[in-house]
Length: 498
Image (cartoon, rainbow, N blue to C red; front, side, top):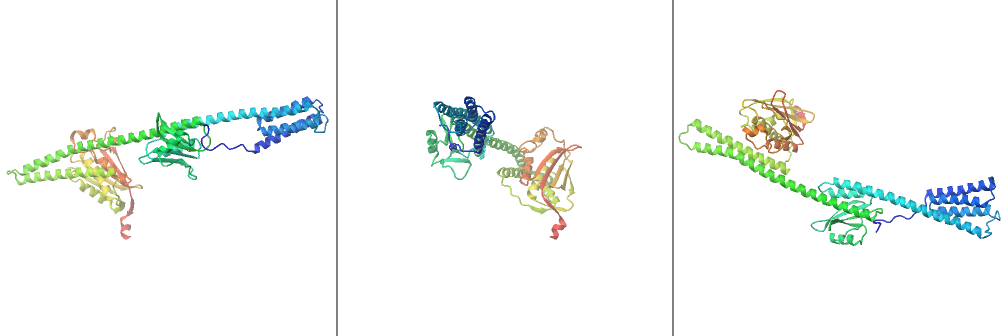
């Protein structure tokens, strides 16, 4: 089977063929004028050879009907002007018949040989084009990625590379099969029947030459259907093999992605469990010891107040830990909802400060207001929660009684809040990983507590507002964390008047 798809169109009468015929007749006419009127050649053999040469050239470069027409006209002119009786279409003896036969044979044989040569040339060019298409498609196969768009992209690549009219890929599904199409929608080719098994049987039996089974070894994983210009059987078989490889590769990438997701989920759960267990142990132990101390009969009022303070402080620490876990779960689930409101930026700073007040007791907080009494439209809850984690991080990595500076200002992009501390700064190798969940710097692992979720939560909360956060070292020492929240701004007086 050579052709799958629509049949090649029959040859038609083209303008180029008509021009070839007119040029051939003009050559015959020119030779007649030269020999009969100019040189008055009487040797019929010389004229016949000249005409045969013209017919041969025409046969080598034109369709057979042009060569035959030229040979008939040349023989008529030759008989009228150069064979006795001159000026009449009369065949005097058998030599004239031989000349007629020679002219026709030259035209037929020459045209046939030329047509065969042109066919072989076109066939070789078509084979080169098909091999180039297969090579390009093999590169496309390497670019097929995982996801729902992988197989539709593959169908589009086959359609584009082979300039087909329609491509459909049938793959098994839980019920029946899935069909991925590219190309013409109307009229839609009727490749398929009720189930994939029927389509595979039709493809393997050759009942429908437009259907090709997708084989991997002895296993058929699907069917590809094509409609379009003629394509060699060997090329189609190679095409089906490439499509089968691409489909299997897409499935492999999907499975690998699922495995990676499962591994990350398992690692996340294991890390979260270990981190929570570690951070729960310290406050629970402190609460238990403080509770035991409260039961002692010899405690005075000062000691009792101190133990109660410890219980409250560690209870707040536990509450903060559980809040972090809930926020991280909401970020992973993508269920964070925005509630934009018009607020003063200092209100956001105060709300964030109140959330981590217990962490900031040993530090001096300096607020720098650069909003010029403007209001901003954003989600105050998410913004203050994100800022609270930056404040808690600054307090955790700064020495006691140091100053934490919080500066906010309005830019063309929105509200920019910067938290500056007087700690040891950031290691250059650790900056790219600061906002990864559960990541804690080398200095933090030695003497501070924490789960390593704070900065990751900040990034997730800001991402929900289409904002961003970044970190850098201060010129005079310490670290600087900046968060930018896209927001509209208005003067407070204008909004109050409205």
